[in-house]
Length: 425
Image 1 (spheres, rainbow, N blue to C red):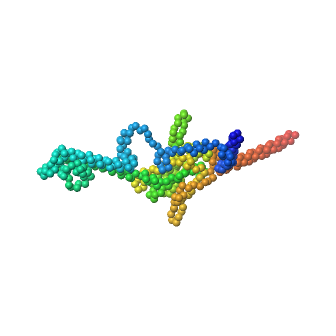
Image 2: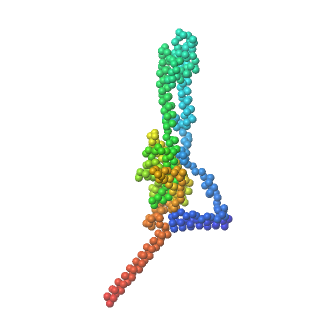
Image 3: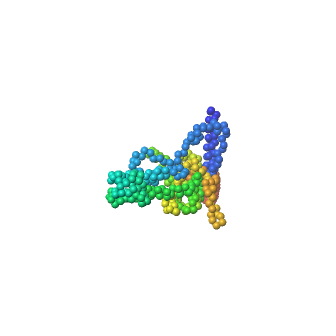
């Protein structure tokens, strides 16, 4: 056991030494050496098992649905104060059930009243009497009263059952049912129309790349993801924004779960407003204001964070606002990769190959954080593409030149001293 512990410690030192050598020589990623089989078998396995068992809990799923459930809501009456929105938000099966139930209940309710009026007036006892003037002709039971209620509310008017002018209570009921029937029609048909015309399905044709990537762009470390629109009818006034979901603890000790931090994707430069005709790569520059400023490649898998991206715009066909969402967890952020180009120039037009929409390829990218790269650049005042060893050699050359200059200056001072002494003699 002691031998294996020493072997494990030595392998750890080797890995640390390699990572230090990597940081000193060049910020470009290099592959770590493969451990011997005996060392791999005897290394502690509970760490990998815990990582495998740990399930990533998303705040927003890949399809854009929020993974949040509201529990212990006591003030349920608030849902009834906005009954229209409540009905629109219901699932289709419940919405259709309520739609049928509302009409059926109103028809039955007014049919019952029509039958009561006929029963109280004695129309049921004078069905075969030609001298009797009923409230509603040819109404001889509850079924016929129910059918007359349907004809009245839907304004069908078959002409077989009609109201007479000798029944004032029936005339009042006819007015009430006509008004209430119009209100029910407006409410239920409006609810169904809004639910049908909701732009949620339009978001199904707005696609996000399955992975986000981190690589160099114009000499700066950037976080990027790709968005696209599958339809020929475009999204008008499209805009993109991103949020970092990560729990934090303040300096006072307060724990803030799922804290939301803005990720700048071009708000100040206008790059967040998109002309989404072809797929676009959205870039976030990792600078001092970025929440990824101190995150390196080695530290990224250890972070528990989630990036939520939101694409908004108006549907060109209907003018209604549409929103599409997606998210990226740490396992879906690829360090040192770029997106494969999907746009090609054909004979007279541009063609988008959506088969390559989610594809990426590996590229040379520093494994250091943006903060470490900036400190390294400021320390040497040289481009980031220079390796650290070349910078050290450059400093050594500068020191050698300074020493030579100092020696020349000493020799000149000695010659001047000799001339002064000779002049005095």
